[in-house]
Length: 532
Image (cartoon, rainbow, N blue to C red; front, side, top):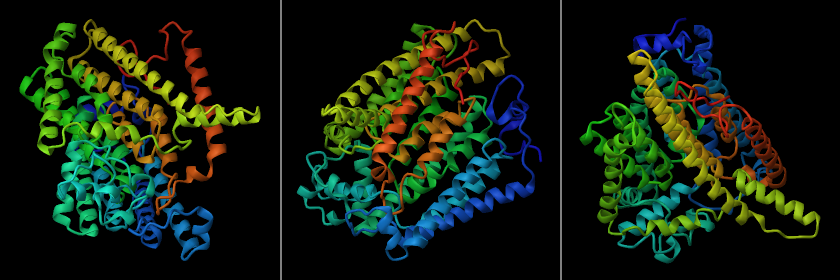
C-alpha cells in the first residue's frame, strides 16, 4: 500500500517518503503496512479507547474527593479488578496502536479519521487522570462571582465546589494566565452547576485540540515533513485523548494557540501585519500558560525573510514580539486582574514527584545523605540549579538555531529544500526548548509531554527520543487521578537519577568531538540533528 498523494501532502511529501536527502524517520526505507495491519491498528486503538471510557465510569475523577487511594485499595474495592484491568489494557492498546503506525501512516486523511475515532469514546467520559478540571471550575467561579483567583485560594473565596478539589490546591492562587481565567469564568457563568462548567471546559479543550489539528499539516509542509506523520504523532498520542480531551486540561488551549501562531509566522516571514497577528496568538498562548514563552525567541527567528542577519532579525522578529506583548497587555487589562497570575506560579512546585528529573536527583541525594546520617534537603537546591541550567540551555539552543540559519545564507540548495530547511530549524529549536523546559521543570505531569510533542512532530527528523517518554508517561496515572509515582518514590528517583547521569555522560563524551562543545542540535545544512 503506497502513501496517498490525495491527502494534502502533495508531491513534496511523496519525495520525502522516498528518503532522498531528508533522513526522516518515516522515510528510512520503511514499507507501509498492509490493509490488515492498518485495520488492526485502527480497531485495536478504538478498543483501547473504549476500555478507558469504561474504566472512567467505573472509577474516574468523580466530584466527590475521597482523599486519594493506592492501587492496592483500588484493586480490592468495588469493580477494582475490572477497573484496573480495563484501564491498563486500554492504555496498552492505545499506546501500542499509536506506536505501531508511527513510521508508516498511509495518508493524512487516514490519520485524522483514526485519531478522531479513538477520541469519540473519550468525549463522554468522567474526567480522567487528574482533578485539575475541578480546580479550573472553582477558579472560574471565583472570577465570575467578581473575585480575584490570583489573590488567594478558592477555599477562602467560598467556591461551592470545594469538595471536588484536591486539598493541595484549595489554598493556592491560580497559576494560569488571564486568557484561561476569562475562559473558565465564562464556563462557570454559562454552565451554572459544576457539571455544566466541567462540560463547557471540556468543550474549550476540544476546541484547542481541533485548532492544533488544523495547524499541523501546514506546519509540517512548511518544514518539509509529511503531514500524515505529524498529524498521527500528535492527535493519535494517548496523552492527547486521555488528558487533553477526557481530562479537559488547559494545555489543549495553549498548544492550539501556540501552533496557530507558529503557522502564521513560518508561512509569512517578513509580512509584518501577519507576523504581528502570529505574535498575538503566541501571546495568547502565554496568557494561558507561561510555558509558551520559551517559543517566542524561535518564532522571531522564523519571521526573518531573506538573508538572516541581526538587522533582519530586528526588522522582522520584533513584530512577533510586539504582537505577543500587545496580546499579554490587552488580555491582562481585559480581565481586570493585571499580572497577578505571575504570583501564582511560585506555588506550582509544591508537588514533589520523581517524574521531574531535578526532583528525582534531589531525592537521591537525600537518600544518600540519610545513609550517612545527614539531611541535605537537596530538592530545593537541585531544582534551583535546574532552573539556571534551563536558562543556559535555552540560550544555547537559540544560538545553535541562529547559527544554523546563518549557515543557510551561503548554502546553495534547490529553492524548495531551502524553503523547508529554514522553518524546520526554527521549529526544531522551539521544540527542543519546550523539551528542555519539561525535563528541567520542578514538576512533571504526563500531559506536559504534549508541549514538545506538538512542535517536534512537525520538525524533528527522528522521533523515538521524544515519542518514547510520551508512551511511558501514558501509564503514570490511574483513572481516579492517582499518580503511580507516589508509590514508587525511591526506585523511581534512583532510576531517573541513573538516566540523568547517563545522559550527562553521553553529552560530555560528545563534547570531545569536532562539532562543538555540546551535542550538535543542527547539522551542517542547518537541519535538526536530533538523535533517537
